[in-house]
Length: 203
Ligand SMILES: CC(C)(COP(=O)(O)OP(=O)(O)OC[C@H]1O[C@@H](n2cnc3c(N)ncnc32)[C@H](O)[C@@H]1OP(=O)(O)O)[C@@H](O)C(=O)NCCC(=O)NCCS
Figure 1 (cartoon, rainbow, N blue to C red):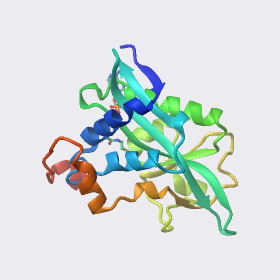
Figure 2 (figure 1 turned 180 degrees about the vertical axis):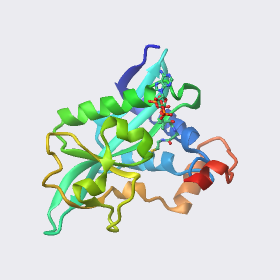
Figure 3 (figure 1 turned 135 degrees about the vertical axis):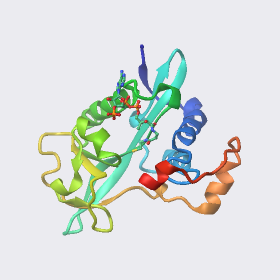
């Protein structure tokens, strides 16, 4: 299966938002807001076009990943630029074929070339440990609320890249969506039913 990983163009924006909506719908909560997050990221200062990537199979977009600028604020109030990974989506028909891995590996490669020191994400440790992500606590990085938990993970992109970056992690405000904004945004997409599912209860 020959997959191409390419930079997203503006023509792909709405299609990748729809792919994100389809992948996350009813997964972690009834409905989802990750497609709105993606839309907002693209209009924010944290957007990095080089790290907005699609996976293409036979001219069809079947996967997408984005990483954005985020900051760590240390005890002395210094700000350190870092990356925040996600959302990451692979179309349901193409999951478990290594496409998510190809997207993430390419993001890591490009992020290293861009000289970023590390990346942070919230996700399933069983999946992300294989790429080298570790509990962010090991690097003395906490959430903005001072918390640590297994799904909050960090990856060094340079040797000892996170050694001098300790503190609280702040992602862009694009990640905070408002209920009314989501209702308005949803009008662009085909209707989907919001459901409470067993999978949501496991998360
Ligand atoms: C999470 C997600 C992006 C993973 O994408 P993916 O393309 O299925 O990921 P991969 O194929 O790289 O890896 C998934 C699994 O397939 C396995 N796999 C990889 N290549 C494979 C292949 N050629 N044949 C069979 N299995 C394979 C991997 O070992 C992995 O196994 P696991 O179940 O032990 O984790 C995708 O499931 C998704 O879009 N989910 C919904 C949205 C979401 O949750 N996003 C991430 C939020 S943190």
